[in-house]
Length: 323
Image 1: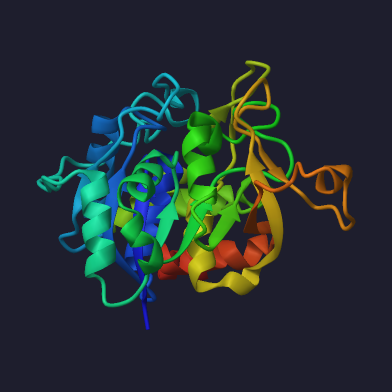
Image 2: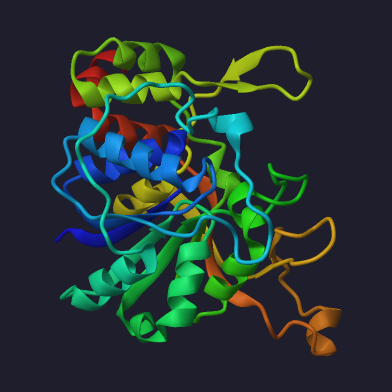
C-alpha cells in the first residue's frame, strides 16, 4: 500500500529531484505540496515546483504557497548554491498549472484531516509552514504518522560550521516541530552528503529525450562554488531526494533514536545538537536535559544502494545501461 505524503519544499535543485522521485515511485502517494521561502523567494519556489511537476508528468496536485520568511529572523535565501532561480539556471518549460487558492497551512490541515490514513509529512525546507500548522491547528497531530525532515546534522554544518541550512534558516520553527511530540526522522548532512550520481550518468540523463530524465541530468550537473573561489565543482548529490528515498527503502540507512535539540542563540544558532553519549551526563544530574526530543537520526547510508533506487525510479533505462 502506498504511503500518503505531503511534501513541504523550497524548490531548489535537490527539492526538484525529490519531487521527481516522489511522483514517479509507485509506493508514494503525493497528496499535495506546500512551498516556503528558502532556496529561493516564495514566488520562485512555487513556479519551480509547478514546472517540476510538469516534467515529472504528475497528475493535477494541489500546490500551495506558504511562509515568505522565517518566524523571527529576516528573510534570506540560498542563491549562492542554487542560483538566482533556485534551479541552477536549468530552464524548465513554462507551466499552465496554477497554485491552490488556499495557503500552505490551510492545505496541509485539509489534506491531513481528510485522509483516511495517517499522513507522513516530508519537510525538505525550513520548517516554518509546519511550525505554523502545529501551533495553529494542533488537532492535526494525531493524524500525522510521522515527520521526515531533511535538515540538521550530528556533525558539521553547511550554513555555518555547526548549522545546516534548513534548520539555520528558521531554528525556532525546527524547535517547535521537534517539541510537538510527533514521531520524527532526521535525514541530515551526515547522509545527505554521501549519496551522489556519477557524472557520466548525469550526462547520459541530460541527453535523454524524455523530459524528466533530461531535467534530472541537468539539475545534477549544476556546479557548486568552492570556498576558495577557484571555480566550481560537480557533486552529483541527490540531496533532499534521499529523504524521500528513505520512505521506501529504510534499510538503506543506519539510524539511532537520540535526544536532539536546536540551539537558538549565539554562533551555534541553528545547530541540531545530537546527544550520542552512552552514559548519564552532568546535565542530566542537574536537570538541564529535560527539553530534548527523541528523534530517529540517520547516521550512515548505503550510498550506492540509494543512488540505484533514485536512478531506477526517475529513469530505468538509463540507470540500467550506465551500471
